[in-house]
Amino acid sequence: MAYVLIFAIRAFGQVLTFALLAEAFLSWFAGNPYSGPGKAYWMIRRFTEPIVTPCRKILSRFNTGMFDFSVLLAMILVQVVERLLVYVVLIIA
Image (cartoon, rainbow, N blue to C red; front, top):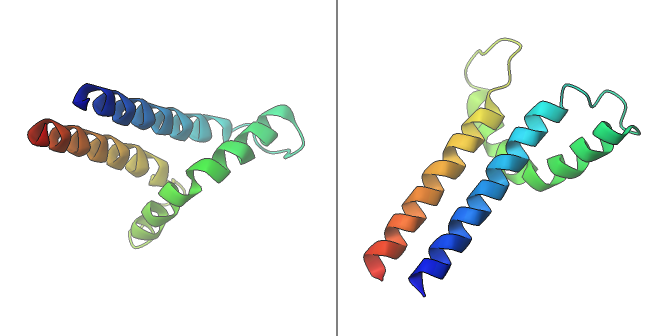
């Protein structure tokens, strides 16, 4: 049972990481919201925005210039939380 839960946690973490990576990549091509990449960008952004917004608020305190590292911070946090949850499941099981 624990291995099924670990598999689900890792799969969800990978989906979130892939969605964050896709959001970062598609942001370069999302100039027109009615184009294919623009529609995909806004769909993925609606999925990832609850994760990225707190990271953006944290990083707004620092001067990063014109670069937005909030997606990178969100990817790191997703990986850390994923590993912590897997560790907790292994300890409990």
